[in-house]
Length: 188
Figure 1 (cartoon, rainbow, N blue to C red):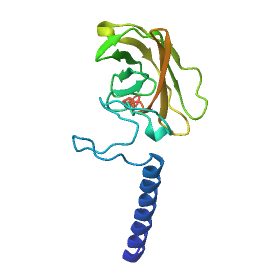
Figure 2: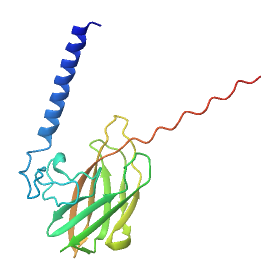
Figure 3: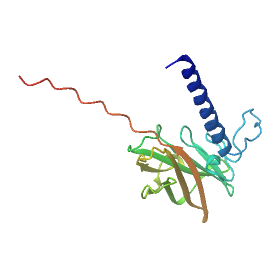
Figure 4: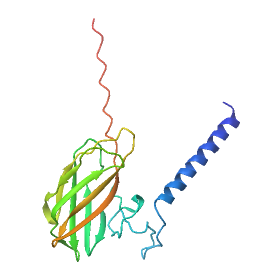
């Protein structure tokens, strides 16, 4: 391969990557103005400890891949947390909590369900009481054969008899590759 062909290939690759990044940025909605702390975020969603408002397109959903996510729903803050990394085919403990005025409140009939854009089976879990006002579930999610890693979690229940619900987004990590078995010496 000549130097010219290599440079042309790199330019094409750069153009494709630039187009992908541009398209991904447009799918996530408009960027919100900088917050008082000076950090700009996606309008309506947050991935770490801030609160999200209405969750619209999937890019606007709070992302719980690397940090806890929260959403304000009718004066109640719903918080979702997971052990990390979130690995496919591994048991992962998820925790959820409802808060009002900064204090935990009862999340009655708490449920956590997971889905992808394509059918991946039934992944619904009842939340069980845990410490500190948290409710928990142990979850195992499969890896999609298509290679897609994006899952959506729906947290729902009742607070004070009123239904509350919110969706979150996560990127599932592939399971760790198992080492190849050691070669056995040839029989003599």
